[in-house]
Image 1 (cartoon, one colour):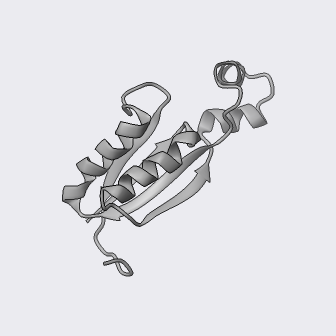
Image 2 (cartoon, rainbow, N blue to C red):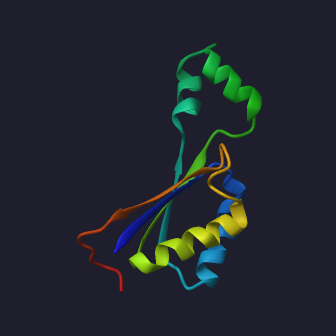
Length: 110
């Protein structure tokens, strides 16, 4: 089993991405609102160069979404492909990040 984690910087793509996953038979995601380091520093470091630059480049974005999904190892690539069909490649700068971790124990899912 694997834990697939992806962070979407464009939160408006979350619902279409989850719909795409569901239609592919990949269910059971947990979604949390999150904030990246640059946005957090902007809030606490008034006038910092990094915060000012981020605010200029993306004035409306304050949060992103982090999605957790436990799945079979063989489903990971298919899940990433589904999300990228909606959001574009994670290789595009500032699009988000995706990674998978091994899961040694799971209880509560089929």
